[in-house]
Length: 398
Ligand SMILES: *Cc1c(COP(=O)(O)O)cnc(C)c1O
Image 1 (cartoon, rainbow, N blue to C red):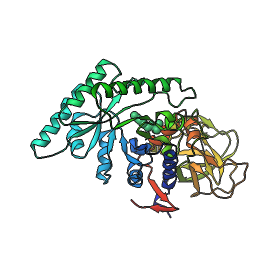
Image 2 (cartoon, rainbow, N blue to C red):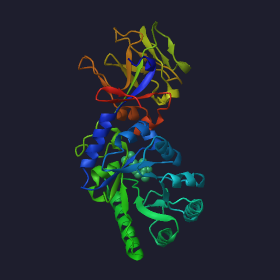
Image 3 (cartoon, protein in one colour):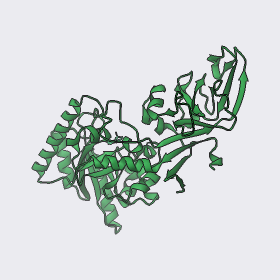
């Protein structure tokens, strides 16, 4: 089985993702909507298969992407739910966004006139659609979004009056919701809430969907759930940071990565291994070559003994530099290892093993070892690593 994926594949556990979403949903007050964040191809797990799995859940309002193209990809796959693009969208995308009911985040005056123009042109051609937009508010991230204050108020006022634009939502994003000290995030929330209240009162308008909570605030800031939450990283079984509470919600890992040993050799003492000869054996060793490298998105920063893989449930340390397509590990102590044997780059060894041996590699660990964070690792895995989807122990073909 999986013969054609011998070099490398990432196994995605759809049931784990489903459970994670359900567990996050259970933490919400009755009736709170969820926006499943599937940007960067679902944090590297695959946006389309995950959206297909979640599209009919009653509590899933829709999906969020970072770019218009990611939204189009979901539409091409037949996803019908509302889609919100969280970043700025450039005008070239507006016509297709309008036709396909893709919601832009709005925070620039010029967007209002440009979006409106497209609607009027569409109507002139016999079309009948408005742009549903969500106003982005900056409450401390200084990224996109209007700042609370008179200029922001004017933009909202204008949006409410612009022909062809329906203001469906308003949202902000916390810069520091994943820290132990949530003072800053609570301050942001209060400024957002006060701003929204003022806008609603001054304009005699109620924003249908007010939202601000990401994964960390779903877990640790229950007073910020509002009408909808935006759930990203925890869906995929990863923690937003190591300061977020672990005891309130159960999430489980959803990705494992497998390869197979491509070559085994014995090297004498004083033999350099890999580019630059940064590792030189100080004794006779047995080493294995693994046919994966930074060309797959496997971090080069795991070079030089920082990273390891599992072979027969035992830890095999990386020797010297990770190359573009291959790297070498020390298997001197894994006497039964043979060419073709399974190598776990991420995940848990399920076979028999000695309890003293480390039989698990987590994404958090790989993030730490490579000097990055957990979901940077999954986002960086590229298309050279096939994603295979499993549910109830069976592979799902898309
Ligand atoms: C990425 C993103 C999210 C999801 O955040 P997680 O921490 O992954 O849950 C929510 N909102 C915005 C605006 C984002 O950019």
